[in-house]
Image (cartoon, rainbow, N blue to C red; front, side, top):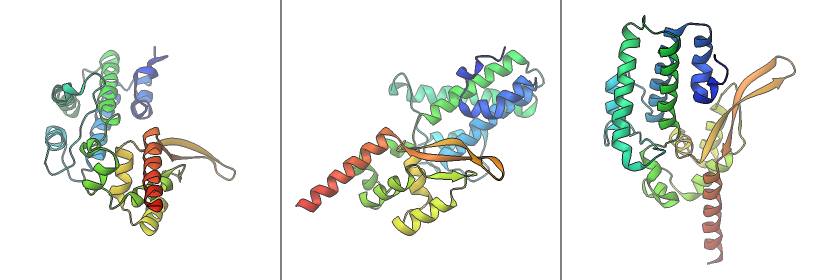
Amino acid sequence: MSEGIEILLSPRIQKHCLKLWQDKYYKHAAREAVVQVELALKEKGMVKDGRFGRTLIDSLFTFGGKHKTVKLRIPFSDDLQEKAKFYFSSVFAYYRNYLAHDGSKVDSKSALRILIIASELLDLIDSSALSYADLGGIEGLLKAEVFESDHQLLGVLKTCDNYVLLNHDADGLREIIFEVHGAWDNHLNAVLEFDLVRYIDTEFCNPDYGIDGGGRLELTKLGRQFIAEIEKRQNIKLTE
């Protein structure tokens, strides 16, 4: 029955939940799916405190709150933003509350439905950026003081392109962008959340230890467009 299910599930749900479901740990698979949505929300909003459930949703979906506002990217029409937030909040609370306190009635079919719904919720997050993603290109990022200059943005983008992270360790990358470009974690998070750079899970063959996990960064089409625009601006300045 699991053949072909992968196409309905987000990569994150496949990785953390599908094997549990296939092994008939239905309650655990469903619960882990909801946990992954909660973790993804915290990552997007950079929430480091103990907020969870409804409190977490309210914090991230309320403009001007303590944490960065998560703006959902709606595949149909952005006019549905508020309705999508209501859907997200209601569905998340409905399943989370039951799974956190019981979950005993979750069977194969209901668990699979939860995995698919969790995938949809993750898509609403993963295909979106945070609220400053709509600020309007390079000028918007600079005006909002996300980056100090277009030179700093260009440096971070070029450093990220094809950067390899063995064991998912980004400490070396953080050190480079700080020492060379004066950039911090918030700048690195910005290029990821603004969809200028994407992170790709990768396996590396180590001749001594076998297969090592890790990832690499690559520029998106939008990221390359930003680089081209910045370099064009800088060339114009040089010729003036």
